[in-house]
Length: 329
Image (cartoon, rainbow, N blue to C red):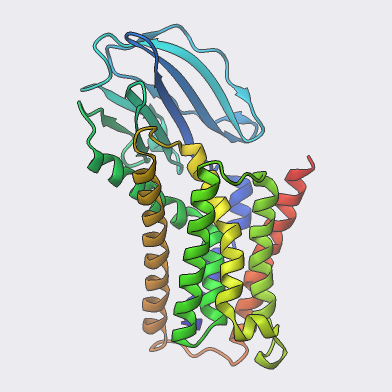
């Protein structure tokens, strides 16, 4: 497993640079049903070098609207809003994001077939459009939010790096299982609480603490077992639970950006959380599988764990400094 981790870290070193060089935030398109055949369209594009990413929504052919206002920068992306008239509704028409196929980002589309009946769809460079179904069923809504949960965790480099550090720090299978379960339980609690509005914290300091949680695990991993924090060494599940509460707030921030269908909130919450867990399990399984394969090929030095710890800590410290800097800009 350690060998697999080192391979992952070698591939991960460019992450901090990539965060600065490319827009990693998804685009966002929302169509909110108004009266009659009118929809309020909210369109948000990622920022690329101080300009909007060159992508644009294309609504079904029966929709018409005036030219949208020029987008405004909101600190992270470029947003505009306008009203579109779609006689006969959206069903059966294609919603597409032009230019998405030339990027490396996704776009989340949240549309209402009628007031209060919202569905979320994820568009990718490989699938930049979709046909609006006539009557989205509960199963489709469920599958959509499971997919969004899987995508969010697998694209969340900080959450995955925390799980990777946990895998390296806790070598006993039973204690590792308890720690991963505690992490899952904790972030599920705060995900639900924050999404439903029971708990509210600013996202910027939460992101800083998430990076600090990875720094903490990297520091512990760099130390010999006898010098590690007694709580972290003897009760890793307790540490994982504490930091999992913070990571759950990060997941909730993403889910708030996506939005929840007003008449299917419990189901969408459950589906998104299941998607996050599924993505996390897929990542752990991939690490274990790659580790088993590389044990037959490579021989690593005894201090390999220290190398892994410093690599993880360096990446996390970079994120922490960058996020602190962004807080005070």
